[in-house]
Amino acid sequence: MPIKLIAVDMDGTFLNNNQDYNRERFRQQYTELKKCGIRFVVASGNQYYQLKSFFPDFADEISFVAENGAYIVHSNEEVFCGEMSENTVRKVLDILRDFQPSSLVVCGRNSAYVGEADFNQSLKYYHKLKRVDDLYTINDTIFKFALTFNESDVPEVLDKLHESVGDFITPVTSGNVYIDLIIPGLHKAHGVKRIQELCHIEDHETVAFGDSGNDIEMLHHVAYGFAMGNATEPVKSAANYMTDSNNEEGVLNTIDAILNKEYPFN
Image 1 (tube, rainbow, N blue to C red):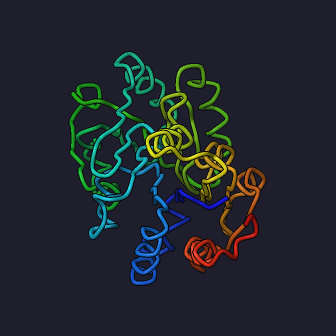
Image 2: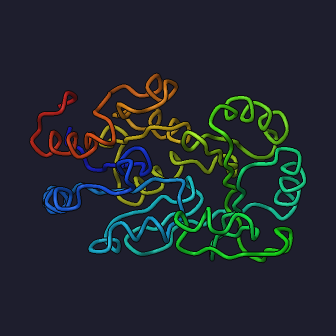
């Protein structure tokens, strides 16, 4: 059965550790993907505006599952926009006072929001970022909270967050020092499924790549889930295939194999 959709996480997966990718190699691959009728989907916890900036030549053609699945844009058309309730936002902000993250970003439809102390630290990750004096007064559709902690503290903090907020919000890891608090059920698998439905693509026609905890649902959802060589152990356990690390262009290597019909599930 031919592959019709390829979904990729960005940080630690499609992007190397310099926050870039082999643009010329992928440009050639993307031309071939289009000829073969294969849809390319970016599935990331990051902000849509930032994700779009990585693909200036064809951002209007591909699909974006942004904010871990809370915001979905397909061929330059918004097709889904989740929303965290005001009550949930306030409850989370109250509880996070006890956790004291190194940085705290509130991610919304129109912008991401931080206090003064977190602005410079967060600026490189958000193309739309605003300073606010009081996070409780943000007037926007809120998707998630993005938190940063010391890497050694993340497992313990994640357990404590599950205990504190897990009955109304979902904590997931999104990198070595990052934890996202997302709307329950609005994960990457939800976003990929939406794109599949729009394009009439089945699970057994879909490939996905990931490296962190927020990729696990997506890797479980598709028939062909690839963990990166640099992925965490839970992600490797969740995937049924492996590829090279992000710094070895693992995603691009596997795309070549797909285009050449050399992949192991052919």
